[in-house]
Amino acid sequence: MTSQPSDKPGNLPTDPDPENTPGLEPGNGVNPGDTPPGEASTSGNTFREPKLPSSGANKAVYVGIFAVVALVIVMLVGYGLGIG
Image (cartoon, rainbow, N blue to C red; front, top):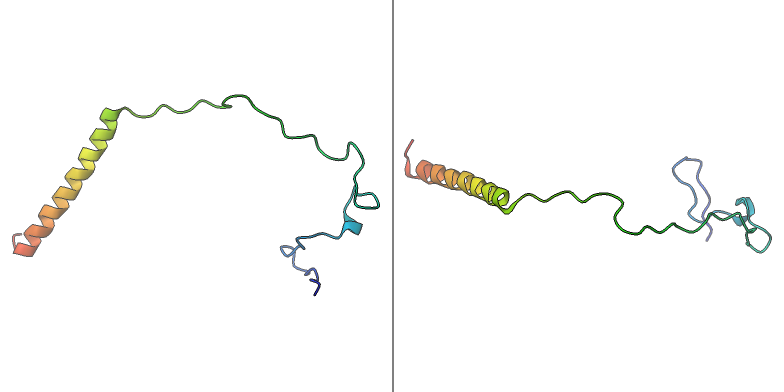
């Protein structure tokens, strides 16, 4: 079973025909210089890592979240008891 390419632009075949692939020699080889050079390696980071917030800032966020959750719980309990 062979798949036929569709006329729609987004439906390109996943395995192109070697007859239409530029740069291939008979036998599906390529000429030296036709292929791009290998991937360049990098040593070390290419950008600076961001500084992480202090543990005090993290604790402040946790306290704020806890306070909001506690307030919601108190409001729900009050609503359930008919206060307010």
